[in-house]
Length: 509
Ligand code: SF4
Image 1 (cartoon, protein in one colour):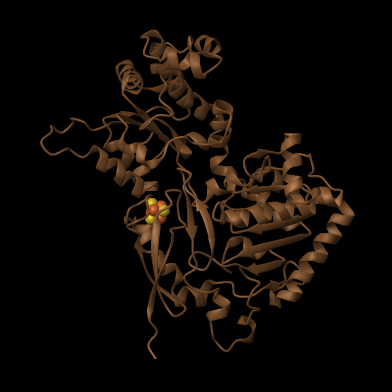
Image 2: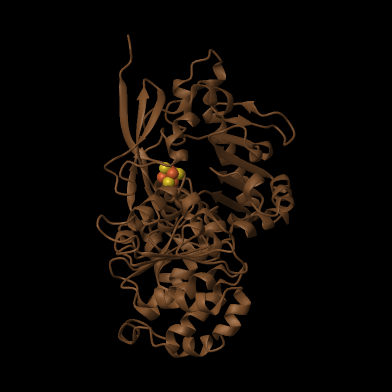
């Protein structure tokens, strides 16, 4: 009997644009992917990555690369042997319990991922903080988005970007800093191109937003800009402070907005006094005329929207980069109105979801802060810890890099890694690999058996991936979208006659 095809509405997992997809499947095989015309992040568009997503779920890839059942090593350099889920979970529990009993809960660390669903993050948090009693849980989003989080909190008091994608259609000035949007967030860039397309009956520039791009490189994005500020690497703060210097000098700022909604303008004014145009032009390697044009356009447009990404975030002064840019929005009142505001673009598909439910060592679920005793008490009450006479630990958790350093130093003895590949993607590979070797027990929860980190794991737990999972993700504009499973977990559908591919039905989701 021919199996009928199905269509399942879900989300592309690759990047923070968060495009809606329609997954086509037949029986237990994904056969294609189309853009969802009704999803407001993309209205049916997909980039090449999204449009070829189904190829990652082909039968050949599944057979060759998927991890399909738990695998255990008797010792680190021994080949991993297939075990049942019961054996795997019992082994993990007893090793963790033993290490916690001997060294305390902070001898355990959880390293999770911006590719997890929000519900996954939440449960990991509850496991680490609520059950184990450690705040050593951090996401690989730490390496890309933590500067954006700190910049928003520092400036606005909350990690909550105010603009949304629709603001692109209402902006008069689009200011892109440290982001090759055309390459890294292509579907969003199509939207910028559409907003800048000539209007019927209008001249080429009439009514379209001005595009300013700040980037040391001549990227695809920079090449279509009205103004490309090709600054020297690492001079973003000087550029933004120089623009504010000019805005204040030319009285292009918004004093009504500043008086009503901000504090500390005097201190900021004093700070940017040092950023005269001659000095900034020399520091940044741009002309004074371009600096003036950028400041005027940013300040005097009816609405200015900033889009920024890793060029600002992945820096030794990433928080300062973010803060200096947000200061421009606050000084000009370009925030909280259609077409205006600072919108950080998230790299991974659900980096924003993690920020909402405490996937970083210093955060708790629902935008609560670990350092705030009232917030800790709220979360502890929600999780029923009070009733057990327990509280959330107030000891600060280790961030991603600190966690691997602590494992390399022998302080952290057990690592649980989910949906990320630190043996390839973390900086300072010597330390990371020393950490993975030195840890007494490493658990890797992964969809693929072939990642570099798999070679270091004592226990490998097979995970489901896109197209097989149910839950939610949050994109850069903070839109929460539903992720739906089109097919079952691979172990339920692969029939090869190899007994070690037979899994219990409920454990690997
Ligand atoms: S822009 Fe991002 S979310 Fe959209 S299809 Fe491409 S990779 Fe997927």
